[in-house]
Image (cartoon, rainbow, N blue to C red; front, side, top):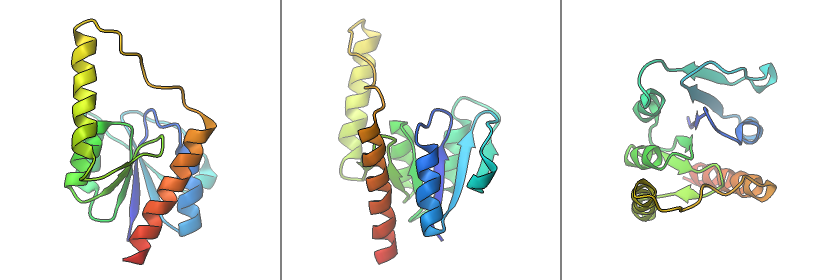
Length: 149
């Protein structure tokens, strides 16, 4: 059965994940490096992972399997999850696939290098309501494609 794993520490779409998961009867696990309060009505699991900076990422990769869904804004985590067979969606609604993750990772690495060299590359765009809509549409699309198989 499909599970949804959420890289929860800075995830702006937690309520949206729950809304879609409840509609489809899917289990959600929020994975975090520290405790956070989840509303009781969400009926979701919180997994607090102690340890290194990447402990939550490592835990998600270790759990995610074929046709599970991972919600993350972390591009290296997305890459690792795709290699593990999971479906991955970014918090802005972008679907990450085997076909596009290489170029997304390369762009991320290039911008990281430029920032390290002192270039001003700007930060992430502010999160908008249209991003929520794109996320909801993308998550629904992933679930529908899994159900069709």
